[in-house]
Length: 327
Ligand code: ASP
Image 1 (cartoon, rainbow, N blue to C red):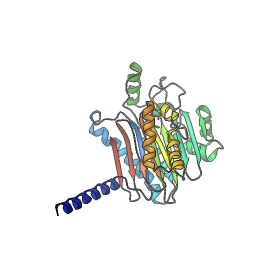
Image 2: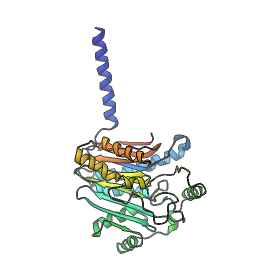
Image 3: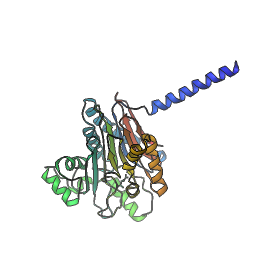
Image 4: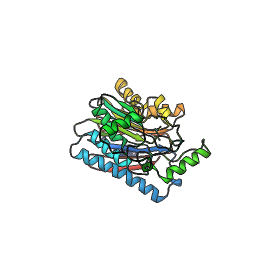
């Protein structure tokens, strides 16, 4: 009798446990996952107001993406819409709010990829384009190339009729102080992160991914990170998943992170969560910190990171939002 009760209670517990787990990461019919950067993000260093502002920024971006998806729009449009919102928000290190190079300039990188066609567009070293993600999309759709950088990318932007902003547009006091701090102690850990990214699955079952960043504070003039590199910072294929990364770009380039997640799924049939975690563990072993977001064709998603925090959020087909910051 006792044994029977014990077994019954145990199964109920197990069932409750698995239901809770499913609830936490239920596959979405369609939906979107975004990040606003990974790094040393700790509760004790955050004011309530600052935390609230970051949460609100992520929610606003998720809603912008969802508005597209709900109407039957494409994952590409949703990714671009969400990232534009984050680029316009000075709290995130992309567009307005981009970090400074050693020289005190802002150089922005971005990329986007269409999982349906495997078409991709990327831009690097932009100094006068307010929304780099939209220029990356134009490179993909209106040029025969995948990647344009610096002056060439801006000449293309002009040709496309994109209005330019002065470098002053990117100035934020917070990022400027961060540069001064970093210059006086270059080894110091930076707690200002905020590269942004989005991955989406639309109602037609198509995947897309995009990433946008100001890079790393105090970076050398001309340095390009993983964010605009297809396969490193961004990747999408309807065969597997859509991925956007954030973290120490040099390590993400060396581990070809975004494509590695896809390759594990493609060649070995590894589920998205396991593939994403495996690759983040590899980055960690190499000495890099950061994280990624990924979503597959069935709407399963993953958001692993090896830093103390990563701004991240999801919105599912019902419009239910979840936003998290800390581990
Ligand atoms: N991955 C970006 C870069 O290296 C920076 C970041 O995500 O924080 O440019």
